[in-house]
View 1 (tube, rainbow, N blue to C red):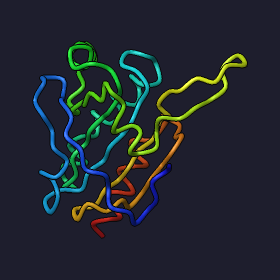
View 2 (cartoon, rainbow, N blue to C red):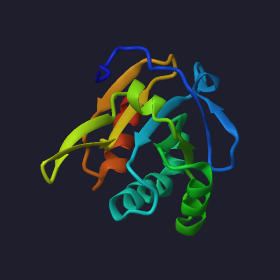
View 3 (cartoon, helix red, strand yellow):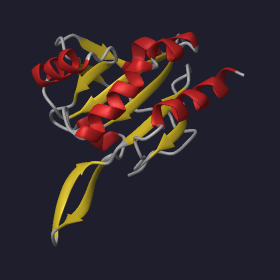
View 4 (tube, rainbow, N blue to C red):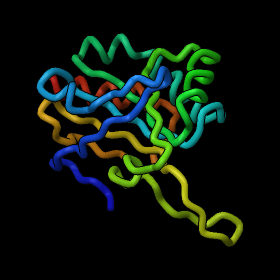
Length: 157
């Protein structure tokens, strides 16, 4: 089930790369939130996407916005990925895939005639009241972070 603009963002708590729990509700009323879901730490496209968001993290913070990258990789893999690539953005671990399913990013696709499931690269912009303002499914990583930053700036204007 795909989420739609105007819906309340599903609440969750997930561990970050340092095994500290991040509770989405903590940010309600304080910050806009960008959640970007990606397939796997260390793959070329996912690395580019995560580093692009990280490179613009200060610009997002100026807009009262926090960033979270989410994949099904475990916390230690996130920590290695973060440290190797110099990523400042918090990476959250959804090992069981529960949040991926809540946000509709765990999707089936045909690969070599077989049906396989994986994370569809997707981004959600959630406003300070916890409402989804943009639900972007199956995005291209190229230029994506700057496009999301532009959309976040529109929330504040």
